[in-house]
Image (cartoon, rainbow, N blue to C red; front, side):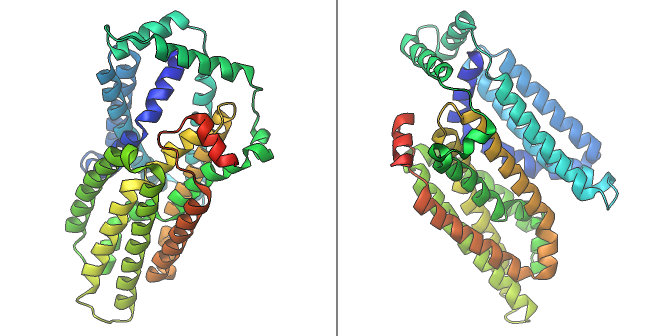
Length: 373
């Protein structure tokens, strides 16, 4: 029961988690250069251990926040340094396979967490924990009854299997959840994030100035996105975000096109840095966090574990595929790469318009009604 409470808390703070994870991914680069790969792994591990200890011994909401901040930073750092370390130590003929195994283990871990988190029955401990989180003077009886009703409803439903996700009644929810993960990852974000310094160098712009500006902008915009998500709504935010990503890709593509054909060479660096900053700013305000939030809201409760695992698997596979193919695409055509990403993100806009319902402020029943109408 306590696990369910923490899951509910986690869903409400998904945007903040994505914000902190992105900070870890950005700042671990200089740490890696300073301490080395193993040193950076130790730093990442320390943050994760500290975060889980804070969560495990939590007695107040603020300690859960601290735990999630530490875990988010540690996992963001891991997301950068682990693939780098694997790529550097692996034989070239096994590099792709070993990187894929890393993604597979991440997916296995997520699946195991769903299985473990299904344990329940500790009602007294649950009520004590809820009272501590809400404050000793808060009346938690109504909230506790709602959570208890949720668990009892879930118990009465048939246990879902992976193949159940392909039943017609679940198809639209699964398509939305998985489709949003495809839109998020196949639009180029991991390639741009991991190789942003190289992009600036190839465009003729200072990589140090560009990277610093990039990092600062991402911090500010992601924070804004997390703050306005519950006010602006999921769907408008992701549509604005995806539109900005398309614009950023096109600006960057024009920059590389001009450079390749030696046209307006003085304008190409400015166009490139503008395009990349528009891209990352737009992605950070919506596409980074909103798909995770929507995914947590659209699945019926009896398939949420299985469907969540599938969507997460697709997300990590997309992350790996994007980062793995980015250099090959840039070697093929620098401007063609960003035109391809622009096209994918344009399709993402169409997908969101046609398929994704607004979930802000709606109950599970209302969301399911909107999906299945």
